[in-house]
Every structure is written in C-alpha cells, then in structure tokens.
Length: 348
Image (cartoon, rainbow, N blue to C red):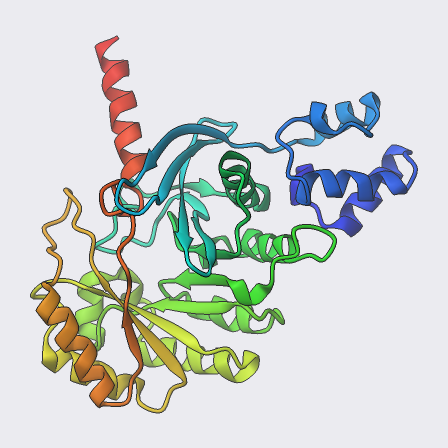
C-alpha cells in the first residue's frame, strides 16, 4: 500500500517497522493530509533516509495535464495524469456556500449506463484511496482555495471500488488530517444493492445518492444495465435500510432525457414509487454526448416534471448547470484526450 493511502495507525506501524522514532508518523501524516504537499522536498523536517523509504513505498501525486475554465461561472475542469499514464477528470465548482469538487473513483467504468460518456470504453482500473485524495489536494494546490464539499460522482462507480472508497472517506474526514465533515461528502451510485447495505453499516454520516433515472423496471433497463441485476424494489429497499440505519435522507438523481423519461405520466409513476420515503429528487437535464442520440429535455418539461412531483409531496430540485461550456458531461475530457493522443500516435 502506498504511503498516502495509509491510516495514521498503519503509518505508525510502518514507521516502527522501519526503525524510526514514533513521532515521525504524525509529522509525515501532517505533510500528506494537512499540508498536502506534492514533493518530498517540501517536507522540511523529514530526514533524507525516511524520504527515500517513503518514495520506495509509493508517494502518490497526480499531474495536471489539461485545464478548462468556464467563462460563464468559473468552474474548472481538470484532467489529471497518474503514474501509469491513466487519466482522470475532476471538476472544481465555486458556490456561495463554499467550494465543491466532483472526483472520479475509477479510470473508466463498466456499468454501461446509456446516457453516460464515462462508460464508453469500459473500466480500465480502480483508483487507490490516495488517487482519490490527490484530486482534492491537487485542486487546492492549484487554486489556493479550500474545499468544503466533495461529491464522488465523476468517472466510475464508487461502490464498484468499495474498499478504496471507504478508505478515502475515512482519510479525508480524519481529525488527524484534512478533517472534512462527513456530512459534506456525497457518494453517488447506480445501485449495487449489496454494497448499499455495506455502506449503511460503516457508521458514516455521508449523503448517499442513487442514480434512479426511471420510474419502472422496464424503463430503467433501457437506460441502465444494472437494472437487469437488481429490481427497483430491491434497490429502494436498500435505500430505505440506508436511511433507517444512518438517519441520512437519500437523494435520488434523475437525468431527464427528452422523450424517454420526462413525461408527466412518468413523474406521477415516480412520485408513487417514492411515496412515504424520506428522500429528495435531484432533476438533471441530461448532458448530450456525441456517441449517443439522447437529447436534453426542454425547460418546460423539466419544470412540469418537478411541479408534478411536488403536487404529490415529493421534494425535488433542478440541478443548476455549471461548466456547460467546458465539456460538462463526465468522461468527455478524458475521452477526448485519449482520442487525440491516439491520433497523434497514428500520425507518427
């Protein structure tokens, strides 16, 4: 395991095994998770021989490859490179209540959701906890601004990388490190049911968001392959269990696709499906992508859908669109870079 992925207790044990004084563990941990340095040279009170051992164990740092800044709202979309050449996307957003960041949990994705660019090309590999942390730390190093909210909603399915996700949450919220409130963390999933139950038992106070996107099993199957594995009833039962265990209201994400899932009739079905649940529906006009023929619902349909839910006592909001001028769809920047790199290789 690389150094940045270790809990403080694990780092203390590693320091002990290497024969260093115990206080070195806390020093090292602070450099990694309080000061989030990008170079071992910046660790001014760490001896050279320990720095060498850290480097040999693995000192994870991501490299900024590309950056896009929205002229509309200042949203920044980063393309970060990892040590093996894989690329991940991270989006930094400024709001009145603080800065938010949307991070990736995998390089690629194998879930196959029809409206998502991230899944085109499939899953390459899971990210380590340190690679997830580094997206947060690198964004702060570059912008000079603190991040107060984290959304694990970028490329990849977080619950398909469960162990590293849990480790990331514990590290970013550790009082000995960055100390971010778990209430400021949202994890979004297409719905791997057994893992929802596992997450409920972790003792976290994070927000869980389920990608729902359709009010019936048959309609959901057209959009999301995961629906062939778990029914809506099984999925919603897991969400109810999550609320019962954690007391944290579940958010349901619903991407509105023109002519597919945005009718008043479907809004009524959705309200019936969610009746009695302590939940919130986040309506998201879908981001069109070149590889799919899905179109974004018009504003009138979006507003009508929301109003229909509210009449049925289901709380809903329409997600504010940010960064719409900088390839807002997840996976687009990474994919574009990969295609361009391949074209350059072919030309050579």
